[in-house]
Length: 283
Image (cartoon, rainbow, N blue to C red; front, side, top):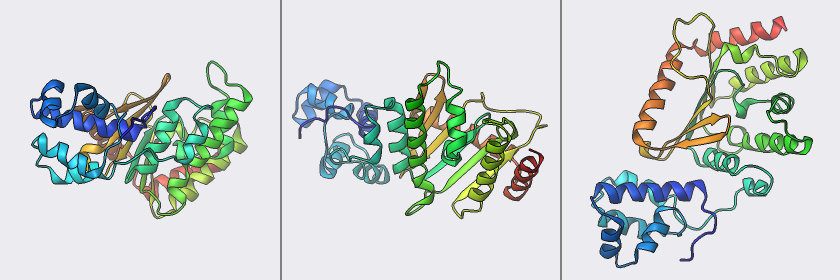
C-alpha cells in the first residue's frame, strides 16, 4: 500500500512496536527484509509508520519475528489500516503537531491517568480558565492563537463527557487549586466545574494537600494514556517546549511508579472534594 505522507502518532507507535519485535528477534533491518522478501526501504517505512498495514500483515510480521504474545499482536491489529481523519485534523495548519498527537492519543486511550502540580488538568478546564492560562504563555500568543488552542482543548474534553466516556483519574496538587488564574471569579467557576466533574461516574479527582513530607515528581504535568495492552501505554510529559511522548518499557514503568506514589499521597476522593469546596468558598 502507498505510504502516508504524515504518519499519525498511532501509526508511528505501531511501527515502533514492530521495530521492537524485530530487535527482540535479533534481526537487523537487512535480515528482516530478506526474511520478509521485501527491500530494506519497505521495512523502514513500516517501522516509521509511513506504510499502511493490514491486520493479516501485522500477524505475519509477528510470526516472522517469533512473537508469541497473542494479546500484544491482537492489540496491534486494532491499530492497522489507513489514516483516520479525526476532528483534530481541522487544526493541522493551526496548532503544533504535538497537540494533534495528544488529541489522537486521548481519543484512542482505554483510560487516562493524569497528575498536575500547578495547572488544572486540561480535560477538566473551563473555557475561561484555559484562556487565562494561555494568555500567560511566554512568548505571548496572538489572540487568534489563544482561541484556536482554547477550542481545541474544549473539543478534547469530549472523551470524558460524550459517547462511551473514557475512565479518567486526575491527581491534582493543592497548589494548582490555589493558583488563581484569571482572578477570583474565574477561579471559583473552575473549582466548581472540577467538583461537578468529580461527580461523573468515570471521573476521579484526588488532591495532594500541602504538608506532605515528600513529592516524587518534578512538577511537570504527566499523562498516562492506557492502551489496549499494557505494553502499548504511552506517557506524555507536558514540557515548556511541547509534549514529549514516551513509550519505552523502562520509561513506562518509571512514570507508572511516579503516578502510584503521587496517588498514595493524595486524599481519598470524598476528602479531596471537601478540600476543593473549602478553597472555592474562600475565594
